Image (cartoon, rainbow, N blue to C red):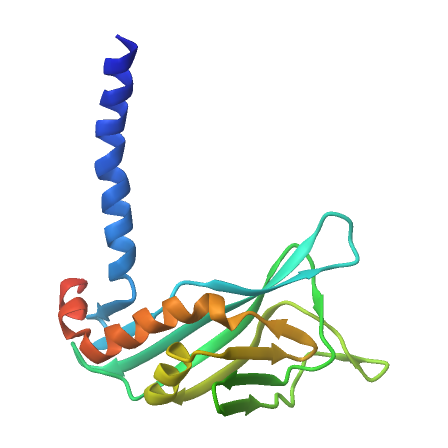
Length: 185
């Protein structure tokens, strides 16, 4: 009797799990009919974990890549990497200069408005830290790099953990007309 109940539960749970997984893959490219806009977006990837002064609290620096263009099935020319703070505490950074090194190329963004200042130090922050916009060809280079490092202020970024998401985004942009038409509302 127990074997039957367990297999029944598994038989019911497996299709729900498979549907959930397959729908996640479609969310990279979607068509927003109300704005006649294709939106391409990765999931949020944690690229740095920071301890804070508070007991049992931590803060993460996350990254998400986005791109959009007008028209169903279009392919955007530019994409943005957005870095944000998530967690239970504020994060203190020395500055918000973003550097990405991929094989033999470097991208650098110096953010002049870096939060509020206190005693000439960059203050605590929450929310979006930095955004860099680049041609999709540069994003493809980052996604396919054999060596990928980065930093945001004094925080080292583990960008290698985001490469798979970036590769999926570039693939959706380059051949995503079919994906976009499947996910229209």
